[in-house]
Length: 179
Image (spheres, rainbow, N blue to C red):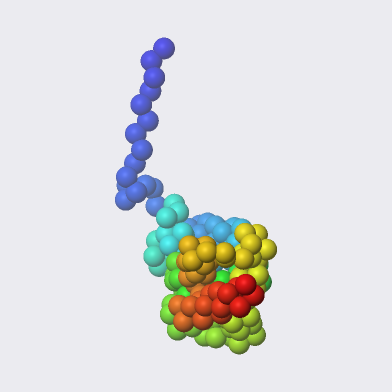
């Protein structure tokens, strides 16, 4: 039995869809992607452009329609993403800023959203929660090495260096006073 070879066509050789069908297909894909999880405009644009029959003009048209319907708004997305992350686990501003950058939210929008989130929940309160959780799981740092591990953990969680330094130093000072 001989196997038949199927040649895939390059993207530019694919038969053209009529514009209305292409728009409908891209809109349906956008709705499906947004139903799966909230996305930023740039993130959605990137995903839609990878799909079949998606030209830049059609994708921009669909994105504009989704904005009109209120399904796409980077400011709302950034704020809801940041507030959800802060509720789930204590993370710092730098980490959230990086995460929003990875989600392709522009810096001004991300900063505005983070200002609102950290106004409601100050970073100092979050770092205290992170320290309490770490102590509950691993115990108080007994040596300089363990204090350094806590310090590094808090920095990885995106808390500011000055804040981490002050909190870990205060924690170490408490330990030496108790002894």
